[in-house]
Image (cartoon, rainbow, N blue to C red; front, side):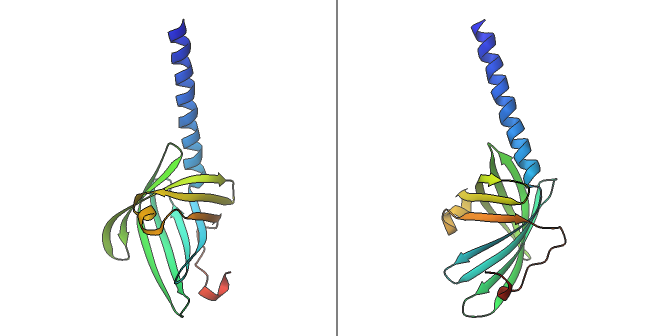
Length: 148
């Protein structure tokens, strides 16, 4: 009897964890805008997370010294253990293999707060916190003077 209860509890916990991952995965599908500040300026981004597990992110680097630079990154994403894992496979026109792992701190229909917790992104940029805002699929990056 004890084995049945333990096994049943393990199945319920496993189903709850899988349901939680499915909810997070379905919730993050869409288009998200974020703005980050770095020592040289700011980065504006629109991230497109597709239901098939692919993504593309449009970046605009806004330099404090003036000027800007745009590029696009693309790859694949998964959710496991409630953690978003991204593998970037292309930056601009070049092939790469860069990883990033993010823990969701909070998410609702319009705002997603997350933190970098692993992968190449953590090693390069450190433990960053992002606030992403849901936008429409046809949203364009604003000019550097249009934010903050």
